[in-house]
Amino acid sequence: MNSVSGDNQGPCLFSIKVNDISCEGIRQNLKPLLTSASANDFECKSELEFLLLRAAYYDLPHMNLYGHTICDAHYNYLTKRFPRTACNVCKTIFNYDSNSKNDLRRITRIIAYGIWQEHQLSVFDETMCGGCPKKLQKKYLTKDIIEESGNILSWLYDDNTYFTPSTISSTGHSVYQSNDDLDLQCDRKHHFKEFLVNNGFQGRVQMTESYGNMLRKSRQNFLRQIKIILLFILQILAPNDFNQVWEDLIEFHIEETKQSYNIDGKFGIVMGCISDAYGNANHWSTRRQLLSIVAQEVPLYIIQQFIPDTSNAA
Image 1: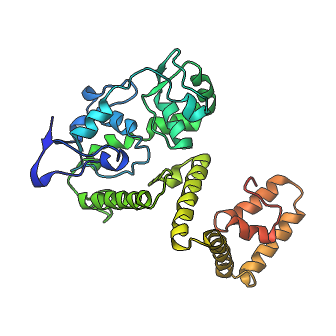
Image 2: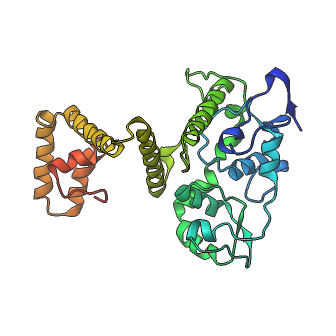
């Protein structure tokens, strides 16, 4: 074990993601875990990659891991083999009354990534029964998920960039995240979750640093969870009228956005012209091209002021 001790101990990278396990024991550097010889899973090039997948660190940003560590407690937890006694998918994903114990096998990398994208659950290397794979494969064995799951941690192996003590690149930008920054990030997340729990919140608290990389359904699930948390906080700030505050907040944002686009000015003239062209177009492809001109920059509800039949699917 390549351990570190004393004042030079770097933060345990896994304390953020696997926060139900408290950091204990000696901390070891991450780079020795990056060799192929340390890999204990045929789907991973290294033990570090295996540990990150077990921790569901799919949204780990590209960052310099020099100085970061893993403590004994997290290492032992993440390398522990799951008992193959019952399916972990039947009840959790398919809402069956019980978990099957028939024809048990491990959950593969691709299936685990697909489940994480949709449900934000950590299931890599856990157990599923013989009846679940067919349904899961039909859902998750897509070209996008196969490619993403295979490449999502490939950046780890650029050790000249991500395992060096240099903090500043020649361009003035850096992929390095200091230990202090990571500690601060960890503290903020911990204190926020602690605040919610201490005030009676019983739901999940999902956090991500790669919202832009989520699949559409994962984004929708994430937004639903955020809405639940925000409504809970509003109950503290305005306990008697929190639903009204929520509705007014949305309406205020929409009105504020409308004003920023100056609908009655030049923007309105341009959108009026696009609306006329959209109405006169005879083919759906022409209409789609017209919408693509503004869709990246203008919110849907603003576009609908001029083209009412526009939808998310347009």
